[in-house]
Length: 245
Image (tube, rainbow, N blue to C red; front, side):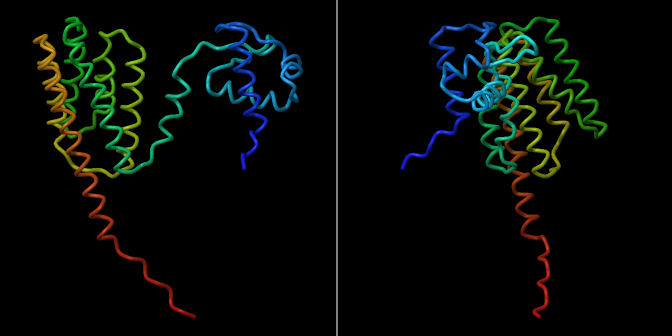
């Protein structure tokens, strides 16, 4: 037996079909709510619910006192909601790291041929700050985040920057909830300095190798975190059972 399509979902489909059939472009104004409801043969309430969901995913934009407009497509709504689709477990972290590794290792070679001296200088400054903090036993998450975002600036691709930012934020959020592990933070800082050294050669292969080494360190760290949490779970004292009545 086929389940009935909810009214708001029917409204979504009808509105998107209307946009396609009338070849509306970003910034174009849709008819009034009343006219749309009449044309689509549905109640204003159902239409309004469909509009709200399409606003949430960035297809429509309601402007106060003006009406309903087609919105230019962006990945922002996807990026904003993606972090909540990951579970805080080791499998999710490993899966995410695999995608992040493929993205950054695959792009670093292009950076090697495009980075300017000023961009490399900023990256080295960030990496040196990371090393200074590492030697003082201080965290350097902000510098690490800015490093990876600055790294792909030479590509002038906002989509790449948004992806790198998303993967960095989600990974660090999940890794933070997965338990704290001790690792050589000076080695992590050194990895970033090694990436700069490789980039200065202008050789894509050397840059890719330096990035590969960096992510290998992260993978090993992640495995240690998983082993650490497993050991904690095994050694956690069991709660005493209540006495029978």
